Image 1: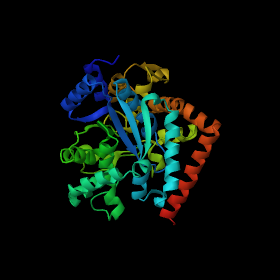
Image 2: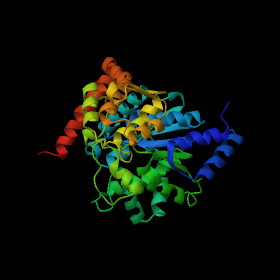
Image 3: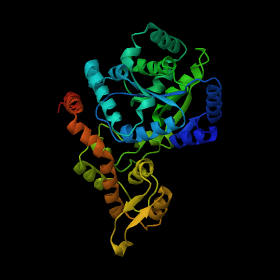
Image 4: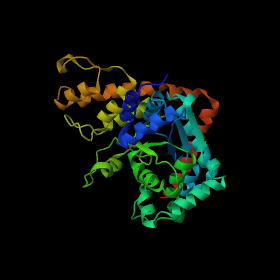
Length: 371
């Protein structure tokens, strides 16, 4: 039996830093339930290299909340999109195997897979109806609008773009309607294409998708000084695969985790733009009922927190300091990563996939930066 509507909406609000629009979401859920139809949310991932903790554990946390709210989930392994965005030199065979690696990680990071479906873009593109959708969206969208959407693939409007990169946002908008997805459940950095899909829906005679944009975990390094605010600032701060020290990766060793967290930006008493507190809020307190911090008696002795709000309050007041917080974060993160490390050490298929991705990514990065 499904949860009451209020509880379902509450769970989705936990996931969504922004929901467009909440009233439409409630109406859609009620209509689907009255007509006995399933609700589908989707997210698309470029298989572009290693997989960090936001794509792994944080993604599992959010997907599980959607499933608890009675929603099924579709993961689009966006291999053609990655090729269009020049990842791995556009080599689709390599990109597909990187997609296999992502799925292997999701299988062992706590995601409830019974209501999750994995779909490859390379299967969608075999259908002429998919390209008909792409064409119709292109006909009804200005080139300037498409260029503004290239932010979704880590590009900017001032970049020199290839024709394949112009195609990318059109394909991503088409994915939503082709799958089809009732909810676009992606990061805030994907907002522009979701808004395009909502605006183009009427012209395609399709329902407007609901957009639920989740928080993007910030990188571990000191944030750059800039004039950006709001969503643009969040995108600027997010962790990056291309900078290994800006993120914890799903196959990082205990020593890697310790080194990165110890080096991470974590100014005393500062709550805003503090990556260590973000890891506490969005990962640790989402996976543990309590958070134990060991510290010397002269600094207050051991303490156990039952909520992030209590931890944040003590940190702001200077009752909890980085030298005591960081070791506890290291311990908790390493405990979360144990099942993933074990699987990739003991399972031959998983181990070979990880080795393949590491080898191909190193080759790809070397070609990009030959010096």
